[in-house]
Amino acid sequence: MASRTTVISRQDLQGNTTSAASITEVKPLSSYSWIEAPVPTIAVPGIPPRWTPPSGQRRLPKDSGLVYIAQNAARHPSSPIEPLFRALFITQPTFDILATDVVTDRNNIRKLMSFVDPSSSRNGLEPFVIDVEVTKHTAIFSRMETKTKEIIEPHEFKGYGHEFEKAYTTDDIDGSTGHHRIVSYKFSGLNFIVRHEVDGYVKGHAEASSSGKGRATDDISSLMGDLSLSTAASTAKTSRVEGSKLFIREEGHIVPIESTLEIKTRVAHKPLNLQEIAPQLWTSQTLKLVRAYHTRGIFQEPRVEDVSADIRRWEQGNQANLRNLAALIKKIISVTKGYGGRATVKYDAVRGYLVIRETNDKPMLPKDLYSKWDGGDDSEEKPQSDLGEQESKVRGKSTDAISGKASKEEGV
Image 1 (cartoon, rainbow, N blue to C red):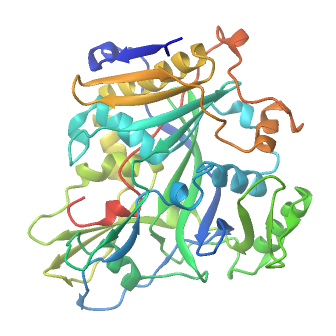
Image 2: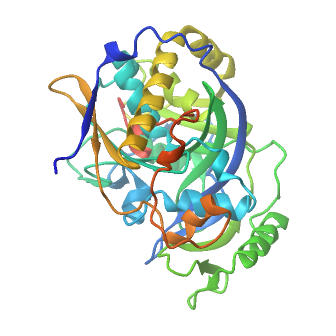
């Protein structure tokens, strides 16, 4: 039997009378850092790169070598969303996932926003696919990319963003290749959990521990013990859940959400307008920004900006689009529930429509994690939507955009 499909146009979203579409009740939940290792390995809670800018001007080489576009999928292709849940339930073991409407990467929200408002994406609206799975009342939006990493050859020029981060930040965890933050908030009546990459943080705010091996690490160790993690033979402080391919290391410390920052590089004669990146900053509620300008690779001394007021003004000035975004997310969830709990959302660039297609793909998560929706029991059942409760209020989720660290590159 052919898969069912639903087509959504921008006109279908018009006239939404929902009340103010604003983000409220922002809370940091967890974090982790990817570690260079032979097997997929994360450090929880990890540490973002520390902002340590040199003084004066600095000449940098252009980016080259390996660049991650979607590091979670590149390092853990069997379940790119699993690290989010492992980190969440290690740092928040009693977290009530049943109260969550949407779990997503920032990238997915930005892609959906670019459909609602193509002008919100500097590079224009490009084709994209998002995988969706509904378990009970929670929709998981999983990012899908044709490429998860790339090699920048010596003859290619794709900016200075990665080299800038190497020169202006310091990794406090050996082997760290990228840090991800997990936050929750309310948006248009929906409870969201959003994962996003963090470029760095500004030291100076109160932190949970002054070193990577302080009390925060002891707390993580205790929680990991409570979760009955099996110790890996290779490292005494690295563990994994039985049945999972993901290894978890106890390392790092909590960094306040107020100190995290986004880094953008740009050629000096093309200043970066905040409106170009406001959707990205708004989606993750990243309120500090570094706009680093260069002339032929020579960077002027950058500064850290507090853009919280700018993000609030952007939100207030884009209420019509944000209401349509909320309506779109709710529609995707509702349709996916009607399809039995699995679907893909694809932008049809030829017709200018979003197409939601019923799928029957394998579950997104290892089996043990689905027990979190059943009160903690290790259920044998595969995820499926609770169709008997469809009449209850559909609460939504969100998504993001632009490729992880690739977004730091010149002109992106």
